[in-house]
Length: 336
Ligand SMILES: *Cc1c(COP(=O)(O)O)cnc(C)c1O
Image (tube, rainbow, N blue to C red; front, side):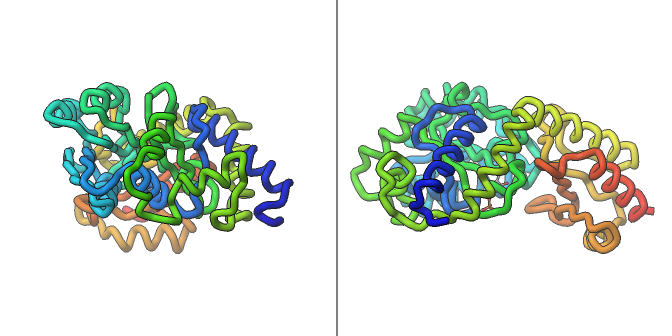
């Protein structure tokens, strides 16, 4: 199927309208970027930031740190607000800095996959308003797994990925820009730094004009179309509930076999659980055994949790009772 074939273009329209439904938005500029989640991150920052702009970035894990790095490479003057690993960002810390000046962008991660923390986004729209900033959110691990409604939450720019809770192969990054963000984009003083991720150009292919920019990855669009269809067939609320209920079962099971959960229960992220490695247990050996004997992959810890915690994913199609039972049984066996 050619990427300008009229049939394919109807599939693209369907994909965009399903994406709007899953994001909870009416934003016209809602489309999949042709690369993984990090490309969606890059797209948000290169389109909204120009050299010398000020950006306020929240960092409580790997992905907030990556946002700060990308914003710096756009030539922005970046202020970082940190929270300890395994904790949520304290909105009071952000509000204090926001009060002190104007920012073009306030950015934070909704579901921090490196630590298993779910960030409450509700205080951040008014904080962004207090410093005149656009609110940018990383929803890579929340889309399709945890409730996110970008219009209701007043989010201006958001990006996600296909291979987390959408259970689609890796390779696309859905993004959405509000009218306000689009206005900022249209009023830039300089061209977008990246030609490939320039939404003023890409938007003309995904809009009504269908002007060629780069060849759409046809196979991946088919895959995303099917995964969104499955998400909507299940129903968003049923899907969020499934992720939450299964996560709770996993948490209870882990504690039942003596594995501590370092993240406080009020901010625990259902699609990804941080589990403390018990004293004296060999991290690599246990993970290798799970993979070799059970075909089960769990993640190693990142950053401050490297060698100290595991990251257990229950995302999309993998969030099932069978996987939870298998994981608990295999861990219990490996730990003796
Ligand atoms: C996975 C992930 C990313 C990066 O996505 P890639 O598809 O690996 O490029 C960004 N943010 C969060 C929160 C993620 O979990």
